[in-house]
Length: 97
Image (cartoon, rainbow, N blue to C red; front, top):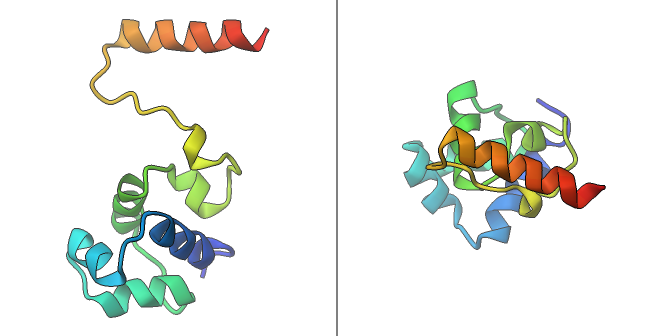
Protein backbone atom coordinates (compact mmCIF):
# COMPACT_ATOMS: atom_id res chain seq x y z
CA UNK A 1 0.00 0.00 0.00
CA UNK A 2 1.21 3.50 -0.83
CA UNK A 3 0.64 5.94 2.02
CA UNK A 4 -2.12 8.42 1.22
CA UNK A 5 -3.05 6.90 -2.14
CA UNK A 6 -6.37 5.36 -1.03
CA UNK A 7 -7.55 8.67 0.41
CA UNK A 8 -6.50 10.64 -2.67
CA UNK A 9 -8.28 8.20 -4.99
CA UNK A 10 -11.51 8.40 -3.01
CA UNK A 11 -11.23 12.19 -2.68
CA UNK A 12 -10.78 12.64 -6.43
CA UNK A 13 -13.61 10.22 -7.30
CA UNK A 14 -15.99 12.04 -4.99
CA UNK A 15 -14.84 15.44 -6.28
CA UNK A 16 -16.10 14.48 -9.74
CA UNK A 17 -19.19 12.75 -8.32
CA UNK A 18 -18.15 9.47 -9.96
CA UNK A 19 -19.45 6.19 -8.61
CA UNK A 20 -17.07 3.32 -8.06
CA UNK A 21 -18.91 1.51 -10.86
CA UNK A 22 -18.29 4.39 -13.29
CA UNK A 23 -14.57 4.45 -12.47
CA UNK A 24 -14.43 0.67 -12.76
CA UNK A 25 -16.08 0.82 -16.19
CA UNK A 26 -13.56 3.44 -17.36
CA UNK A 27 -10.65 1.27 -16.20
CA UNK A 28 -12.23 -2.00 -17.39
CA UNK A 29 -12.15 -3.56 -13.92
CA UNK A 30 -14.78 -4.55 -11.39
CA UNK A 31 -16.12 -2.09 -8.81
CA UNK A 32 -14.60 -4.26 -6.07
CA UNK A 33 -11.14 -3.48 -7.50
CA UNK A 34 -11.83 0.27 -7.19
CA UNK A 35 -13.09 -0.28 -3.65
CA UNK A 36 -9.87 -2.15 -2.89
CA UNK A 37 -7.81 0.76 -4.21
CA UNK A 38 -9.74 3.17 -1.98
CA UNK A 39 -9.43 1.04 1.16
CA UNK A 40 -5.77 0.25 0.61
CA UNK A 41 -6.39 -3.47 0.24
CA UNK A 42 -5.12 -3.28 -3.36
CA UNK A 43 -2.57 -1.14 -5.14
CA UNK A 44 -3.21 -0.10 -8.75
CA UNK A 45 -0.70 -1.14 -11.39
CA UNK A 46 1.28 1.58 -13.11
CA UNK A 47 -1.10 1.34 -16.07
CA UNK A 48 -4.19 1.72 -13.86
CA UNK A 49 -2.60 4.55 -11.84
CA UNK A 50 -1.94 6.44 -15.06
CA UNK A 51 -5.53 5.82 -16.21
CA UNK A 52 -6.81 7.13 -12.88
CA UNK A 53 -4.68 10.27 -13.20
CA UNK A 54 -6.16 10.94 -16.64
CA UNK A 55 -9.68 10.29 -15.37
CA UNK A 56 -9.18 12.63 -12.41
CA UNK A 57 -7.23 15.28 -14.36
CA UNK A 58 -4.24 15.19 -12.02
CA UNK A 59 -0.70 13.92 -12.06
CA UNK A 60 0.44 10.53 -10.81
CA UNK A 61 2.82 12.47 -8.56
CA UNK A 62 -0.21 14.12 -6.93
CA UNK A 63 -1.94 10.76 -6.39
CA UNK A 64 1.25 9.24 -4.98
CA UNK A 65 1.75 12.17 -2.61
CA UNK A 66 5.03 13.21 -4.19
CA UNK A 67 3.66 16.59 -5.21
CA UNK A 68 1.17 18.50 -3.12
CA UNK A 69 -0.15 20.72 -5.87
CA UNK A 70 -3.88 21.03 -6.11
CA UNK A 71 -5.06 19.40 -9.35
CA UNK A 72 -7.14 22.51 -9.99
CA UNK A 73 -3.93 24.44 -10.64
CA UNK A 74 -2.83 22.09 -13.42
CA UNK A 75 -3.05 23.31 -17.01
CA UNK A 76 -4.06 20.89 -19.75
CA UNK A 77 -1.61 21.22 -22.65
CA UNK A 78 -2.74 18.30 -24.80
CA UNK A 79 -3.17 19.46 -28.37
CA UNK A 80 -0.82 22.42 -28.04
CA UNK A 81 2.23 22.66 -30.26
CA UNK A 82 5.66 22.87 -28.60
CA UNK A 83 6.01 26.59 -29.39
CA UNK A 84 2.62 27.22 -27.77
CA UNK A 85 3.68 25.34 -24.63
CA UNK A 86 6.90 27.39 -24.54
CA UNK A 87 4.94 30.63 -24.85
CA UNK A 88 2.62 29.53 -22.06
CA UNK A 89 5.57 28.72 -19.79
CA UNK A 90 7.15 32.09 -20.53
CA UNK A 91 3.87 33.86 -19.76
CA UNK A 92 3.51 32.03 -16.45
CA UNK A 93 7.12 32.79 -15.53
CA UNK A 94 6.58 36.48 -16.30
CA UNK A 95 3.53 36.52 -14.03
CA UNK A 96 5.61 35.14 -11.16
CA UNK A 97 8.14 37.97 -11.27
